[in-house]
Image (tube, rainbow, N blue to C red; front, side, top):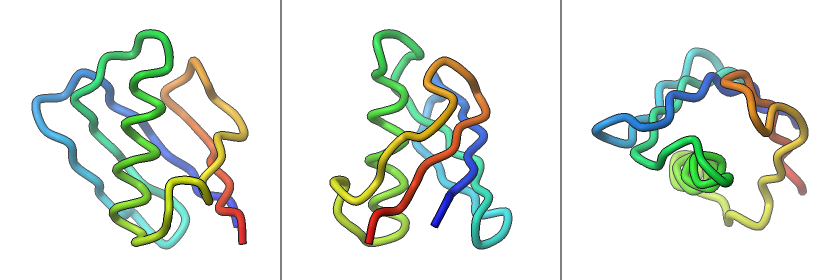
Length: 73
């Protein structure tokens, strides 16, 4: 299953807004530098979906605000 994320790095608070079942807007405190924001987004998404971080993989958008994550079964 693919999850589409609009990322907002460098935010004051970490926040996950579920637009629908596959689209999210995620704000993270981590900066967009050396993959720290991607790691923060994976942490926030795992907490929101209540699944282990190891089941989430970044598929597309490593350096973009528009990202696609895959949930591995």
